[in-house]
Length: 315
Image (cartoon, rainbow, N blue to C red; front, side):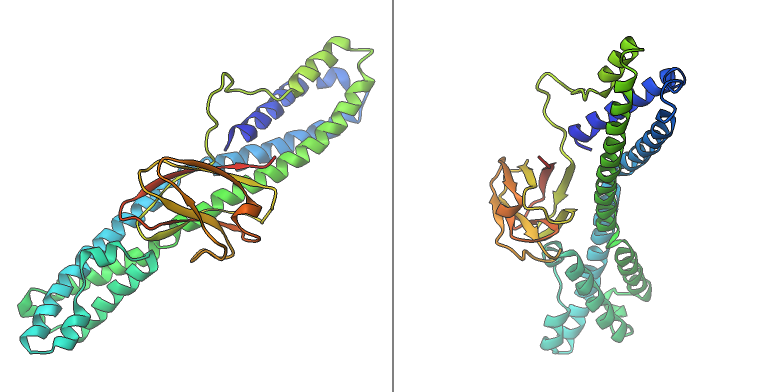
């Protein structure tokens, strides 16, 4: 979560601590306070739950997908070599060309395209299984390729699913926090009726409702999302309902240029993309990134991975 969300949650916890300590005293003169204090506790508990989900480390899924993709690539390139040699040996240059696959072709392909390439080599190998055994592509190696393709396919959507879950958790946190704010406004009104009788407690309550900057001292804001965009790939940083007044701050931590923008889908830019220069920071309104689009996309046209940080600014 970003600092703004953390500070508001800290405020909520301070108010709950105040209520735990003094509610029994205050309800004597304002019995309605108890019900709203309970509502406030419940909504804060929801916020804590969503915060836990949003703060989960999701880099493992991306790392696992990359590991499985490399396994599939290496197995496919190996079988491709045997197929290429076999077809050349029988003077079938057409199929030799079709069966030829390089490491860089897989590395530069999008995730789904990499899977398709691996699947294509597997099907050619299965159709010529007996013929390629003398060329080093044993039945066990063909089976191993099939297994790596299946494992990669099973993992293909996991990182994206986890990013969607993280974004959903942040959105649900904001909804629960807004509901807790509405309840707190009611509690503030009730507390005004107790100010004359309990001036010290009222002063403590006001202090508890203050939103403190827990970082202070000009400490940089923690980004909402940190991720790596691999070469020639689209990456969905977040998905949320389009709001033209929302701003996104993107920080390029690499020496390569990358493109970003809002889109109506996750496979391409539906609006004109914006360049984000090497080692640069850019803050743009949603309306500047496109007239519509629920997906914040990044595309890496370089040949090396690019590290990005994104902060959402809802002011």
